[in-house]
Length: 461
Image 1 (cartoon, rainbow, N blue to C red):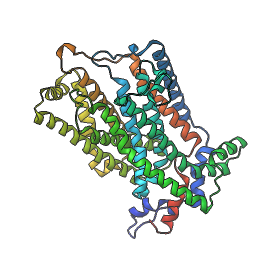
Image 2 (cartoon, rainbow, N blue to C red):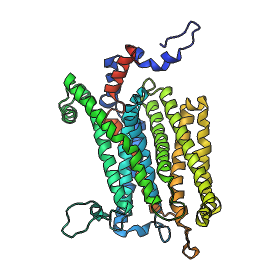
Image 3 (tube, rainbow, N blue to C red):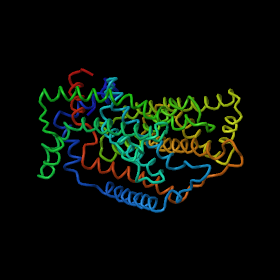
Image 4 (tube, helix red, strand yellow):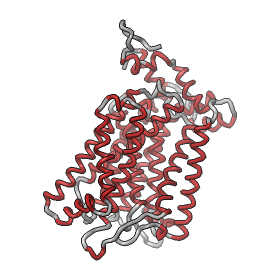
């Protein structure tokens, strides 16, 4: 039961900040979270979601197989729109991965305790999203099985990477990002793997969890080295929040295509990445806490804090849109001004106005506390923001390419079935990986939750 004031109303500090200290002991936190993996059987909801995601995964595999066999001609790309869904998906998936790194690394360095309840599944979200992102440029290559030519390995053919190519920059940015993200995620998982090893009842699980727990025994010496290494990895991961999407933005900014050649792209893309990333984190967190009854761990306060970050990022994105329009007219470049008018009134105008509605107007509802604390309303806002951010990337890429400098080279783009299959299949693959994650690994960090509960019980926080 929650503590009350003399008037009988719940004290806000007790109702949320003290919920762990009141309701859960050191052992009961482990019981609650580990039982989701070790004891709780797969429910009908998980089975249905896994069946759907498996079907979409198979669609993704078929689409990739047919792409490898037939070539990129199965897509709707053509001259002048040579980039379309694949690059749109790439930028969108990379952006989604940024929230996990921000929550885990950046907020850890800032000593923000509210990250504890959401960092584990946010880190997993990052890894799966970046894996999807890494596939997209490779699939766009004319001969994707030669993707390793982009890496500077010793070659007897003297085929070296073209360092002026943004594609090479992407390989290094994404490669660095996924390596650091996996290391950071796995490092934080080691104490929990040892807990699962000690609680597992079958020999196979004991062996599997014990193998990846690396002999963790929870000694003071191990904890000291663990915390030092975890902090160092957080320090390495934090600059990646800025650098990776800056590199992605330079894919466009180094070109002279109207609408791309802009110095605002690096901060604009970073803010947009956090915007879509936190929207996806909310999209995952809300069903996760409802299905597994994790309301004591992922409280309304956590959702509200994520909504506040979403609102701030939305304001920055809206400011970037306004700056882009202002600079185009203030600079007096006829090609830039035409690009703005084409977005507003051209063949893709409905997408432009949907982007403004979903990414600028809709997040203003988050100024209202009752919206930030309403899980269903937050979920709806997060899903729509994700759609809006995908449409924004599509607008940036396609609307600038389809009408460039020469009217004689203008053309339009229409996606084919295989374009949609790659997009929907990647969503299904992401969902499949995440469902496997929550089935076999703890979605919340037991070690950090126990530490936080202890600190709250002692009055440290």
